[in-house]
Image (cartoon, rainbow, N blue to C red; front, side, top):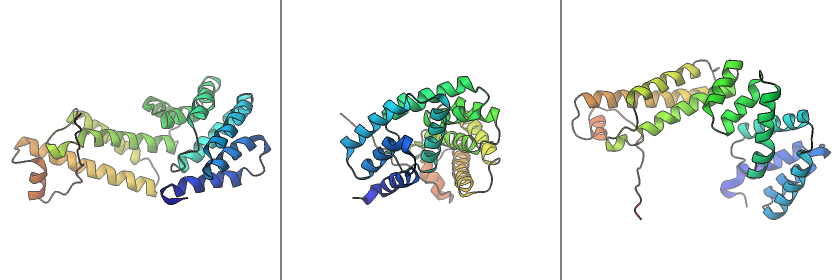
Length: 236
């Protein structure tokens, strides 16, 4: 049953074990257990019952649950069945919005909106409120690198998407975030991504000054090794 989805199922089972003594979230625990068992219809029945209860909780209880839930999801990204769409839209998002209004100086709801709703300005707001927020800083660095990765993913065809100058700026901003992270596997991974993109962009700018042949061939002739995306075009 586990095959490729093993991490998801095991993560759901971890949730069930951690909530064993929490009678107030029994229906949520049941949802996780049933999803881990592959019983989808009954799982969503449990989620519906949980939602009817949780939506009536006071703000503090909803805030604490949402923060716990999003923290677990961030630390266990492969548990992709943890937060179904109704839970995100009807409980998580409204609670974050209320949290920002109720505690405007708290970086946490801004961070989570930035992480889960891909709102980069919310990550910046979280860091403005708390420069030590490592999650917001790590995600900000990752997003900036992904933007540059997108700009460069057609370089195998000699095409740069967007502005090289803007990509330079994004890389500088990403590096500034990375350098403020503590030594860790995550920082090391971000540094590797940065260095690969930095070298790729440098080579592209050098190639543009005196292009000879294709860009991949130019790189190969000079011993510049890069990862090239496979670009697939679809025709109707």
